[in-house]
Length: 280
Image 1 (cartoon, rainbow, N blue to C red):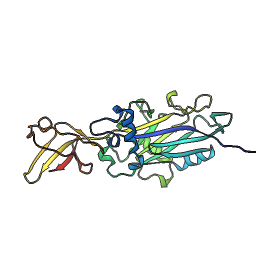
Image 2: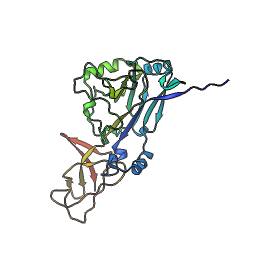
Image 3: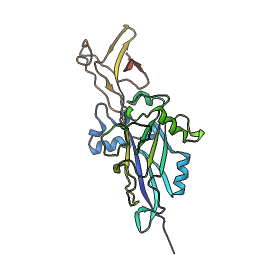
Image 4: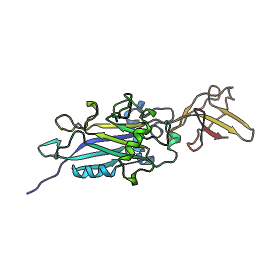
């Protein structure tokens, strides 16, 4: 006599970041499928973030026969399903069941190359349901085909932040950048993980960060001069952004001049503008 245990995909979360995926001025979403695949082969979320289930969620996963599995682009959650219908969970799960995952940043330069503002007493919330303490303008977690980048709109209020942090164990409360909080059914059907019959929809949610753009300031210490670009330029790990001496500066610079791209290490903020400093 033999038997097998079958697991099905409950949901997936995909993390993308344009700093790693754009190629100079070429945007990842505008690339061909082949070029996208090339960029994704070099991409791994471990380069900038760590995502883990909360301790409470770990217990829930075990109780409902779920498995958390990391991927290069995020993670998947699988669940034991019935042999007779592989989109029906083996254990019936309540539609208001909540799963939380902590997002922590492990690259100290993340803020330099990510197009977000950061606040000490507020976290980013990625969720398919709106907390009572948030306004009607609350931003819901996008799906994989949504053309939406993470913005400061996902930064929730201090009150909401306190409420979220209060649900965590003391050992979990340090260094939290964001919280991913999912109910099996969201406020809108498009955010559902299971339908009204309890069958799995298996959605793929997306957290897509944009790369920061900065004004590039070239500093010549020997000549004691500084020039900066007229417009902000993108910071990317791959590719090269060409600087045109005649059009990128005011006044124009000699046509034969060459200007390197900056690293992400040297960035300063003056008023509302971000500057990359390049010493030449």
